[in-house]
Amino acid sequence: MKRDQLHFNRRTVLQTAAGLSLAGLAGCLTGGDETGDGTTTANDDSGGQGVLNRVAVEGTSLVVELGSVSEVDQVNLIQPNGELFGRREVAAGVRQVSFEIGTAYDPGEYRVLAVQGEDTVDETSLDIRPELEIVDVGLFRNNPDKPWDEVYGESETDRTKNSEAYVEVRNTGNGPDAVVELRFSGDIPHLAEHYEGSGLHGTDQVVVPPEDRTDLFSSTFSFGPKLGDEGMGCSTDENQGEFTVSIESMVTGRDITKTFGVTYSGSEEMLDCDIEISAP
Image (cartoon, rainbow, N blue to C red; front, side):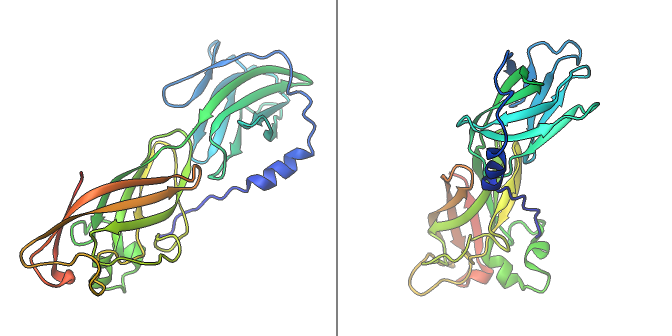
């Protein structure tokens, strides 16, 4: 599966921003209110006549909506560490500007300043943080309606697809993130002693926008034929165990894990094995 991977080079932005004058960052400041969905609106909207009417993350961008009668020369975005993240000039008649924050930003409180001349005429802030969680894991044999052919190619056999898994992840935060690593451990047939690459099929990262979910597809044959004496295989009776799925967040660098129960039965061969996965 081809996914649009949006990359953001924060170093380049900071180098560009370093040469900009910080004049206009000080002045008379007004605040805003943050709503429950991670959107900040002005304290006094006045029917769309405010200066900073709305600040929100959409996809991998921070979007700033200006009021219909606001006179603003530029909008500045300040990082949690107090440094300038970026600056957008506002032409006459423009009512929206955006900053591409990508998935290489520092989570925390970002300040948005509306500047006219040398004065800051309005300011608001938004705390931007992702929150990844593992929702589900499944196999081709139990979930044939997933886009397996699109991901692995129609030429691949069911034996190959039976060996792989998908992991559904959700971002409940208000900031974008990317999964850069997918790992399986525990009672699985194919234990990879040394992982190569991200463990994600065909990519090094998968972007997960805020308040969205996506499927990650594995590249490690975790449910393929058993390797030697290691790993848990199938049985005509029943083998029961647990395995753990681990993903790594690009923004926070944290590992997020979830453990699932698993039962292998009905055959001595993994190709014909009945595999039942259950949430803890």
